[in-house]
Amino acid sequence: MSSTFLPVEDSAGERFYAELREKRLRFPKCNACKKVFVPPRAHCSRCFTKDLAWIDAPKTGTLYAFSYQKVGLRFLRPAVIGAVELQFEDGPARLISNIVGEYKDLSIGLPVELDFVEIEKGVFVHQFKPVQKA
Amino acid sequence: MSGAAYVVGVGMTPIGKHEGAFPVELAIDAIQLALQDAKLPVTEIDGLYTCPHGFLRDRERFMTQRMAQRLDLEPKAILEVDAGGTTSGLNFQHAVRAVQSGQVRCALVYASEVEVSTEQLMMDMDRKRHLVFEGNMLIGYYDSAYGMLGAVPLYAMASQRYMYENKLAPEAIARVSVQLRENALNHPLAQFKKALTVEDVLASKMVAPPIHFLEACPWSNGAAAILVASEDIAKQVGKPLVKVESMSESHDAENFFPTRVPASRFPSVERAAKMALQQAKLSIDDIDVFEIYGAFAAVELMCYEELGLFPRGRAAGALAEGRTKVGPNAGDRPVNPTGGRLSFGHPPYVTPLAEIHEITTQLRGDAGPRQVKDAEIGMVQAEHGMVNGASVSILKRVK
Image (cartoon, rainbow over all chains, first blue to last red; front, side):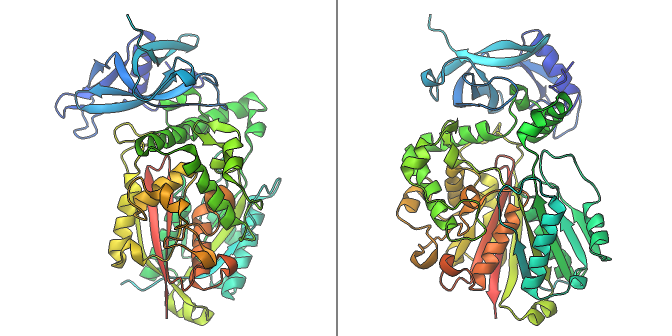
């Protein structure tokens, strides 16, 4: 279920946010065409099947790019908006997300790990934070 | 059957705030200027092509039909296009095809933009919801969860990757703004009239790092109108003939921040330029003057490279050497005599027509202090999203 300020375009969007509510970052995959759909969609882009498997995204990735925004509805400065590169079976994909950390402490290539944040009551989105050294 | 199509008239208002203006009245100003430029009566127009008055405004419909009523015309073609920043670039191409096919003899392609300010939209909850909705429509459903109202942080990340991969210092990017502002000082319709230094640019507020305020396109309004006509009308007009030599468009399977292709590349721009050049049987070296759609300083450099003006990673150095200068000291790749989107001003729906206005002016030899000597062939380029698609058209002065 989407919030007022978080519309979805198809049933895959509904599923995506339902998974996030359960602290799972998942994307649909067509087993026949071997394509993982980032961003999610309700049908395979090639064979049009709606019988898609939802697979877990990797729990770690690398920080591909990052900035911050001053104008917006959430995650305003000093929160960092970033693109995280995640390796899927069919190649790397980059995801826009919130990055936990000070802009000045971050760098391209930094290993980051998956986290979740509640943006409105009952509505969760993914975010990433630098991998904590043991 | 395919005849030729020519740009016979161009008109444009000053680019700036136009606070409280009715967009349709600015459109009429631009249309009147285009008709005067072509010395054609309004009754010659038999095709109307337009687009929305802004991205955040309430959506209007039947715009071309209301213009037909406003001008007492019975057009043989009407079209309203909405394709992000390529809107008027593609609209122009549709009008050209209509003239080439003989469907219309004199097409009017016009755009007028008076955007609603974010302040106005944030004033009440209903308006805010509308702004969010439009924001989601603009950015994409999933990325918009992070509350972005515009694409600036995304462009910032593309700029960051470009600088990182090509080892470019902030000064190299800031120089773009300085060069474009120098160009704009010689355009009477440009929004900004004050020269800049690299220090000014780097001292300006950081919008979304690494983009400084003076490296970002401004909030701009205004209108432009282009008349595209058949050969017999073009010959009547008696000005140098500016022929539409070739056109192309190309798009990626991405929307805004690319998921699967590198953010430091704009392959749709590269493909569109190659196709347009191939169609015209030209090489990039045959293009005498360019007007390109760089909404941010680093993105301008990236587009130069994608279009083939300079090898990868070399655009900043070339600009520093003066190779992109226009006017009497023009370099070998004169770009954006208007001052580009950063300094001329950037009403996104109008920009592709502003580019055509300038290239036509250059090819006619009427660009005064901005004139690139003997300019015979010009290229215009537009893009949408985060440069996920591009349109390219090549214009040529013929006998």
